[in-house]
Length: 215
Image (cartoon, rainbow, N blue to C red; front, side, top):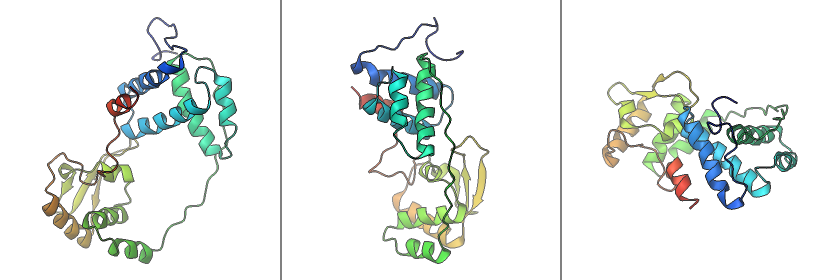
């Protein structure tokens, strides 16, 4: 298909197992060039590596067989969608199956339980993070990407660039969350572009880190 695979139209996928990490990386690089977010690429990478462990990526029948062993239709769809990127890039013929999604009821915690978790946090940074999530309802990845550049400490506003290609949002923090945020920033003194709530135990996923882990 147009926009996928090598320019001459021939498949560039080596069949040797040892080259498959590079074959996956090529797909991720291609998707990155088309504007896919790092968080999306991380999910696709995880699913492709899972498929690579339990099936042969150059043989769609083995991929379908492995996907069929999963009980949850949502999991099946995620695996099939990830492999669809791989197959399209490497020009592997396959018909992407469609599985009926199941909707699970959303369990909203009581506000008093959320406040109990926030107030019980021993770490000020974690207390601020939980407070921001409660006040604004932003996604965890959006909190992870938050920098000082995206915060107005005077007016208590944060500016969010959507992780799902949506419109940017300006959100208001409650007074207690803002007070804790100011105190936390005064302690850690982040740079303007530093991710304030990035976990040191779980560094940011990047294509370069994925590649270095495979060689």
